[in-house]
Amino acid sequence: MKKVGLLCGREYSFPPAFIARVKTLGAKDGVTAERVKLGGTRMGEPARYSVIVATASRMMSSITAAT
Image: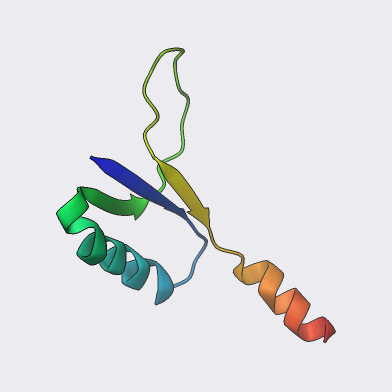
């Protein structure tokens, strides 16, 4: 099973919607999603996530304010 990790802050609407959408679209291919759980890893331990998506809400508000 492949897992998408979502690294986000205090957003309330986007994370659950993103996770639900990934689970819906990825179900037939064995892809799931969850919020990232950070911690240490050991050598030779398989990666917990196939990809990690990081939201940029703080950066986007700064960019929007500058334009």
